[in-house]
Length: 74
Image (tube, rainbow, N blue to C red):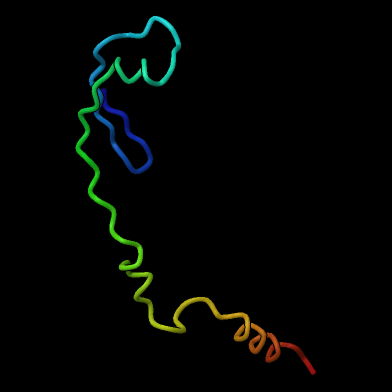
């Protein structure tokens, strides 16, 4: 059985059918996960977002106040 989730595809082999609705530990014994392991996640401190140039993101509170003062009629 193949299950497609939003960003992940699971490949499961059903070994037995359950006779009742039971706890998670019992349910895990009814199937075998044949999906490939997920690649290790990168360190968030080394992502592209962390390398963004200063001032290229959203304006700071101080910068927003300056922009608002330019827009307000005197």
